Every structure is written in C-alpha cells, then in structure tokens.
Image 1 (cartoon, rainbow, N blue to C red):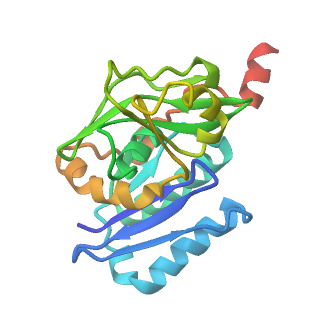
Image 2: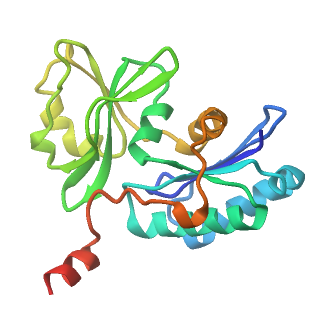
Image 3: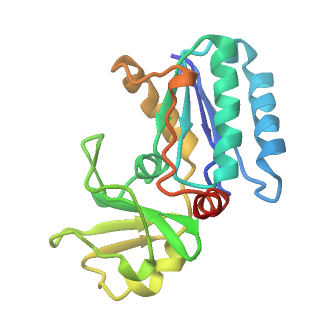
Length: 227
C-alpha cells in the first residue's frame, strides 16, 4: 500500500510516505518555519522523490488532535485536499495514540505528555504489547502536579515535549515506577507503518466525515463561548 502520513500537532511535526515496495521517505525539522510554508515544502520534496507513488495513494493518515490548533488546521486542510484529489480515504490518528505508537522500545505502559499551553499537558495511558496498542485511560488535559503513575507497580514510560514541564512531579515517583525519556518522537513514520492494518480494518473516512479530537476549546473559542 502507498500511505502518506501527516502530523502538524506540535512544533516537532513530520511527513512520511510509505511506498508499496516498503521504502519510507520522511521529512521533519526546522520548527522556526511556519507550517503554512514547511508542510507544503515537505510534500513537494517527497513528491519530487516518488511522484508516481504520491499520485497513487491508498490512504492519507492524519493526526486530528489534541495539539496546536493552528498546526492541526493546516495539516488537516492539506490532508483533506490530497484525499479529495486522489480519491483515497483519510485515516485519523489521535496525537497521543500516535505518540504511543512512535515511542519504540520500552515499558509496555506508556504515557505520552504533550504540551497544551496554559501550563498544562495533554496525556493518556496506553499499553503497547506484542505489537498491539490499547488505550488504558481517557485522553485529558491536566496540570503536571496532578499526574500519577497509575501503574499498580508496573513501570510506566513518560515521554514527549511536555516532559520537562512534569519532571519535578515525576522524579518524586522513584525509578522503580517510571522511566523518563527526553525528546519528542516523529509521529508520521509510525502512523504510516500502522496505517495499512487500519485501512484493511475499515478505519478510513471521507474528508467530510473527519472528526477532530481537540479535547478542549481554543482560547478564541473559549472567549466566544463566555461572551
């Protein structure tokens, strides 16, 4: 299958093209540049490498939140446009779910930490075992000082761009309960790898049916609601 994956939910965004022959092309980096310019440059660079594959996509995988409202809207608009032009379905991924998939080796229990602004983080618990990812809690937005290990004695991997905000809290849990991993994983390659199985399971949707996973309203929407 030919799968294009797009993630623009945080500064550490990425794009990946998984070709039917197994070749993977990835673009990421340069967070000083806005997504309105770098995302389309990445797509053009990948198209220049494998234009034939790009024109014959089986699906476009896209993160639908939570994350940066501006980044999400740019990424989703691009994904919808490509989906409509190519006639292929969209495959939605929760950002936190994609982070758990992209974490790689480590404890089976993993809790991604994604910056949410206002001194808060988005997070949820997942279990990744034998290549299968399953949710262990609801996705929430919360204050770092409210985090718990929630492991019943099993070690939990905490990681993501929100880790620095939570380190003081997490270091109090002890090394037997937590593993802290600096850095934010690239999500698009992991999404592309997981996409074929999801597509075969019928998870594809039309652009008009795509549902966003904001978790909370944007500042502008909050202000409008109050007024």
